[in-house]
Amino acid sequence: VGWVGLGPWLDAAAAAWQEGRGRRGDVRAPDAAYSATLPDAMPHYRLRAGFENLALPATSDASGFSGLNGELTIDENGGRVSLKDAATTLKFPSVFATPLAFESLNADLRWKRETEGWSVSAQQFHWTLAGSEGSCQMNLKLLPMAPPVMSVTAQVSGGVRQEPGSRG
Image (cartoon, rainbow, N blue to C red; front, top):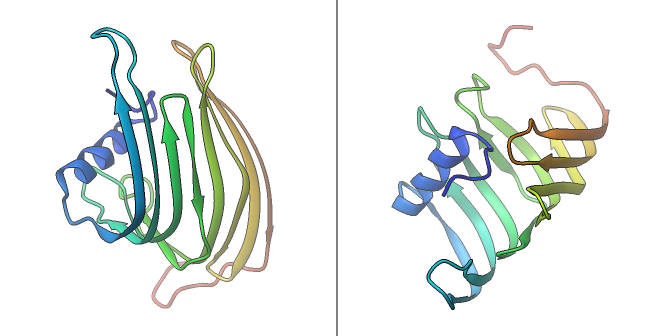
């Protein structure tokens, strides 16, 4: 099953995670349940777990991350991931030449199955990155056979720190 049209990079990252390619970190108190009543009916499932220092290395065709701390709760109708203050690195090799090395990252991301498609939101997203501090709120609608619709409001303060050897 594809990840609701979010792109091949997310599908590749999900496949890498399932295959265990270099993943690491600690998962705390996992609690899961699964049931399928009819062969063609949507199964019911739920998963809740905490995690610390979660990492999945990037490859040439998949994004990666390291240093994620937080909690995850999902079921067939949606979910939430809460990222707790931590130094976190995100790597998107097909988008950015260098990793995004956050000094701190806090976020509350939620997704929900709608009558048609999905809604994704980040009502709290705060970061410190390259000498800047920021926060944003984001809403994304993913509808079948339609382009995504996104709204973002962001506040950023501070300058961008120039890394030694980088071009300005």
